[in-house]
Length: 501
Image (cartoon, rainbow, N blue to C red; front, side):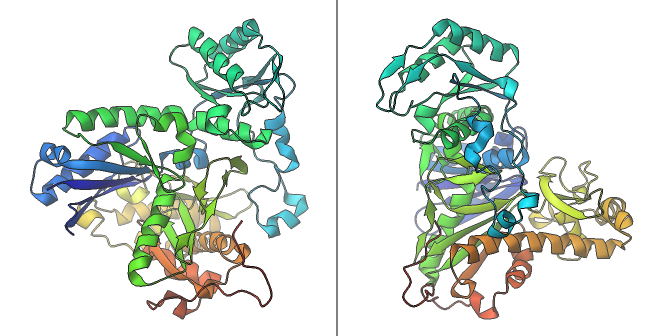
């Protein structure tokens, strides 16, 4: 009997399933273990083996492949917990990443936000200007070398970035997608100085026209690549030493997979791995239930995710936007905000309640976990409200502390706002629902669809706890959650089919 394993590493919990191909499926759930997430993965596999009544070595030796999704990359970008990156650009073109093609104030914003011109702001730059350096070279639009690469200048620039302590270097030269020779030579020269430096080339990760988007994609690839490599390398080694003969496959944003040894080089394609996995999984379930139009909603520990399935197929996009910066990587279109179960609640200087995007993650976790966390989270509010049981999570194996949850909410939310602990918990819960509702409105209504034509699927650790709230916030009728097959999305008479592009 052979097995296929699926592993999802979230910000708070690691979920795993094993299927024997004959219809038997077992599952396991363990806490995620940052910064060494591979520990949590191995514990989940141990639990799977226990459910199957066999040893870990036997399970791995009989596993055809492991499909692995992780939120590590997207969570790192959303929270800004990324590697320090330097940029090498063509002389005279360094500032494209700061000018942002005159669209930096509006990228990823809703129509309402774009209309509010007084509140439009550019995001903080991906990297500070002192880490964005230039070299002399020029290739034209046809790929012809007009100005040779100044290799001595490259060596000086590379040494400067190494001296600044960067963990990775992004190389984005003009028209390199037509001729990548100069970028490849820059990488060779960098490795002469720093052999282990993570170097990413725009001609490899984003060979497309438009300099700003190509540069931002390359920088973000460099920001998450080293962390992904530090995680996948020891994980793959442990799995192989444990008996795994099949490949470890990492899910990609467009719904496919890439081998673990190649994934860090193309780290940006894994940013939506868990996001796309939820939509693809939703599509398979929709096929069985007879639903043609579905909105998938995933409330994880760190993020809230929403994706669309229209006429039985996931809605795709040629790229995505994270923190107002474009990513040139084909993806299942998934909308994301930092508003999950572990989202931190706080009161700002103006007396406004804020939730996220920072998360308590698995360590220290929500205050109620009793692992040293003192800041209140959405999970703490759900415990106070009775949505979560004091018995705890994981069948009682993860106890929850009501006293710690109440104290965190009292200190950081209730007293600053003049509320009782229960009122503050309700406010936190409602803010999460409102934020999720806003994202769903962007995903469905602003894409030209009628929510009443869709069935909502709720998953993730806190999806079922919040789905009624955020669906109601969007104004969905009760019938939108029916189990009967849903009709095609309605379209105005005489109009062309609506898309989400």
